[in-house]
Structure formats: structure tokens, C-alpha cells
Length: 220
Image (tube, rainbow, N blue to C red; front, side, top):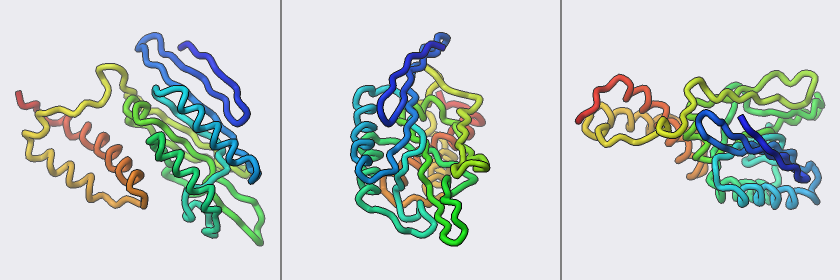
């Protein structure tokens, strides 16, 4: 694998190239400002990093921002910054990879006034997610830190080139295909924003239809 990187004020980025497959992508690690007066500068910079590269991208780290009131145990958030953060996610059509085992990733460790929040996040572009459809994220225990480290497993069957997800026309000829679609669209979703709900459905469809198609015979 070849790589080259760049350092900015709020992030470090690196380009990765798999020589064997020819697949290239960018990984960005961020640390968002905890101070009110620097949050806009942070948002401007992460807008900039995505505007300079339209290929597959993974961007992760401590954003020091929340998206929804449910991201804090007390529900108290700054809606100005939450809206600006969600605008960034929507503008670049990013998918958030959530850890299945933890709701919050940070604590102030103050027993009498305990605050829990979700400020550590992993986002990917749709082109990155298409290449790694089996990706999973797990949060580790936070001790001795006040953050839960996030571990990403890209899955054993990373897809590149011709192996990327493709919709097959013959699926429409199978009656059981419509049952898969129905199951995907009726699966409970905790998201509330239209874009987040759509992304949840699309990602679930990709995973479920792969398993279904593997056990079906193509209609020629």
C-alpha cells in the first residue's frame, strides 16, 4: 500500500492506495475544537477537506459536536452547532457508522453532575461504503480515558473494482426479491432525519440482498 498525508489545524489526512487492486481512498482524522469561538473554523476546515477530494473518504475522530438532543444524556445541546454539523453531513451525503454496543462515547466523569455525550464519530462517503459493505464499528471501554475508543472492522469481503455492489436486473424476476425489499423498508429505524433514514435503508438493503442473491439462481 502507498500513502501520503497532509496536516491541517484540526485534522490530519492521508491518501491510501492498494497497489494490488488499484483502489485509492482518503482517511481523515479530526479533533474538533472544544471552544465556542473555534467551532466555526473547525467546520470550515472539514468542509474544505471534502471539497478538495471527491473520491472514497473516511473521516473520523473527536468532533466535539453533537447532532441531536439524544446525543447527550441530559438532552441539552447547542442547536446552532448541531444544525451546522448536520448541514455538513447532508451537504456531503455522508454515512455515519455507529457503534452497535455504545450510545455515548464521552463522559465528564463527574458523579454528581454526570454528562454523557456522543462526540466521537466515524463518517464515510457512499463510494467508500460501497467498497466496504460489511464494515462494523465497536466502542471499547473508556478506562482510563474519558472517551470510548472506536474500532472499525472493514469486513473480510472488501469489494473493489468489478466486485463492488451492483444491482442485477434478474432480481426483479424473483418473487422473493420483493420480500427482501419489504423487510428492509419495515425494519425499525431509530433515525429521524429523512436523509439518515434513507441511508439506513440503503445500507441494510445492500447487506440483506447480498445474502439473498447468493442463494438464488440468476434468470438469464
